[in-house]
Length: 358
Image (cartoon, rainbow, N blue to C red; front, side, top):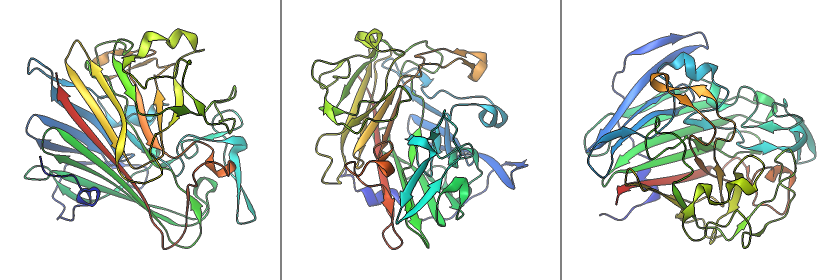
């Protein structure tokens, strides 16, 4: 396999056509498909999101491993950001405010007294532009773009954002996210919020899937899931996945399940590093995630209860999310890695997903 270069994910080709539907939100919403070998996926510019990802199991049977819905309207009405690009700042900001360069910025609270995933109308709930699209060929890819205006959901400055999805050889998916601050410093933390079930989106819970997380420390949180500011060892805690173990092995020791940010080992060099590996014994599918971000959030869909694709009921622990990211509430925690983006110094977030069978 050719060596992977993070910049390889930024592909510049010409956009081709797609059937689209009108949106009352001021733009057209389309569904787009990428295909390479046995791997195929559907996406939409509503939230720059993954709709489905289909790949074979150990017996060659194809299955969709991404939870979601059959219609765009269902994605619009969902409370969870299935498959979406989340921002301007993903995860939680305490007390729905932060101070930057002497100015206090107040945000709309949408998680108790806190702000989560960019506010009530974050990037997952807007229509993005399709800048480039090549559905097949040597390097199938699509690039979504969005201009976030100064003051949108309370955040300072105009921000240009791009999310790119690229299929590589050997069943690999590269997701890249860029952001450029045009006129003011602003916090930026973009994530992909896919809900994965390697057994298939309609296969039940993920408690028997084995996971390994390459992090020897995690961030404890308070009762509202805001980090306390500590970064502590995972040893002798239910958060220890340094060695592969089933997700359900110690989940009952937690109030509801995992919604936990891990501080990835070796995250100071900003190069791609392993974040996590997931194995599903029954299907024989595996997923490895690499990133250049300092953290990864393990979320086990603790309160999930919604009718999904084909009418299948998604229940608690019916999927897991592994959101590579900066640390939650970093804007209020000076000891956390900074997520402030200044004009002239763009934000770049790389994710590489390697799918395989065993």
